Length: 64
Image (tube, rainbow, N blue to C red; front, side, top):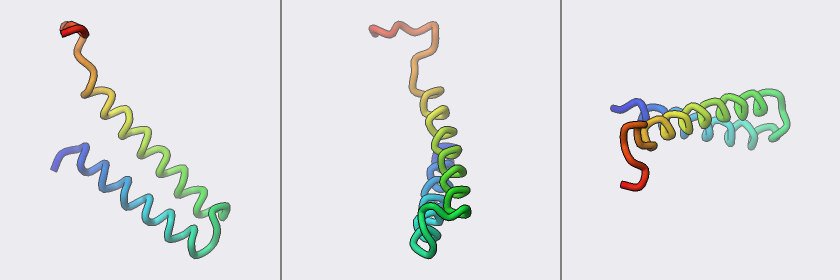
């Protein structure tokens, strides 16, 4: 399993947990806000991971 795949699974699990907790209490409860923050951090990490591996290196031409 790749790092990207593991990160995707972690994001899906956190999102599911967040929705479940929000359904039980509310989207503004302290626990749900904490989960939302944790999900934001995972999404940011995923974004940085994708950005790191999707842009050409400085030795490659952007135009092809």
